Length: 267
Image (cartoon, rainbow, N blue to C red):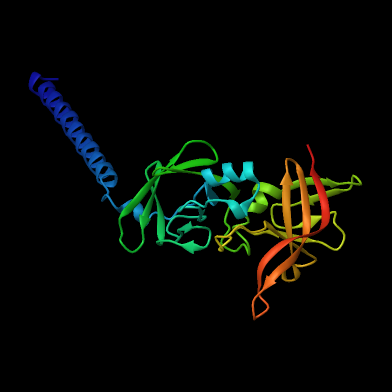
């Protein structure tokens, strides 16, 4: 094999190696360029993300919950402006803070921005607040803290705001004969003959002192109003009498009547 022939082979091999190296470098550059383009998304693209919310459910102002647990008297409570909110099952669904447990506020949307969540005004299209989690069932929104009382999608629930039920009643009691009476979290009642449902009144519109109201009955449309008082773990339920009516037979002033039932919470 001549010297010129050997040099020709070597030059060919060197050219091939240079070509392959350049080609691989071009491919790497192209892949990096595509990857960068995918990560360089417009800032508001996260507002189009349709995803589930792990913290969906009923969230109630922590100040209200803590005070009600102490007083056990919803009719005397001072209700915070931002009283509660239903967090929907997914982003891009409307919700709003409830003022005083009876008035809906501005329509809001929840967006997932990276690893955190934000409230945005639906009409104004601007961020209202960040959602900061400070525990499994506790979150901070601006300067207010909220605690979760119910989990999951409550959009189809007939009574999603059964807040007093959950704080004061849900659980097991026994009567003076030792019979177990159980208040469920979904408004059902077991152990009291002829009574299958209950509902404690949440919103008291009249600013004057009133009786704390608990409704009981065999079916939801047939609930009768009673008054209740807690003394530590003892729940006394009373019939209600009307002391004064107006010209249209609407009761203007109510009072405690005969004691209907005494229940003691199970330890």
